[in-house]
Amino acid sequence: MIPTNELRIGNWVLDKESGNAFPVISVDKGGVLSAIGYGVMFTRLAVDIEPIPLTPGVLDKCGFTSLVAEEANEIFDTWYMCGQKILWQHDNGFCSYFMDEIDLTSLHQLMNLYFALTNTELTYDPHNP
Image 1: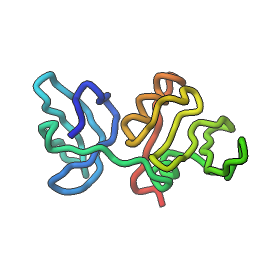
Image 2 (image 1 turned 180 degrees about the horizontal axis):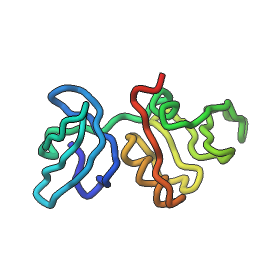
Image 3 (image 1 turned 90 degrees about the horizontal axis):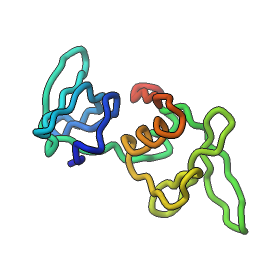
């Protein structure tokens, strides 16, 4: 389950029933959200959705590129967009270069942080190879 106060319009989530990823198009205070998938609008309770875990594959589908970096004698994957360092990968997930203390584990968290920092929506295409 994702607390509804973490969701914004445009966030992508997983439907527990089908296992498919869908964009959120509305959220109400009662924990009901609407999404569109395959041309059909449907509603789900917040308990019926799950976050999309951040993985290198998800970052690729958002348009990030990866380079191996070395800092302080540690080697790790660094993820870039538009030539800017955005994330680095560690054992427990990903961390923002902008706010080192924030660990990101799911796509909606990254989408929200990216928007807050850039005032631009992060696009995600689950069908992008």
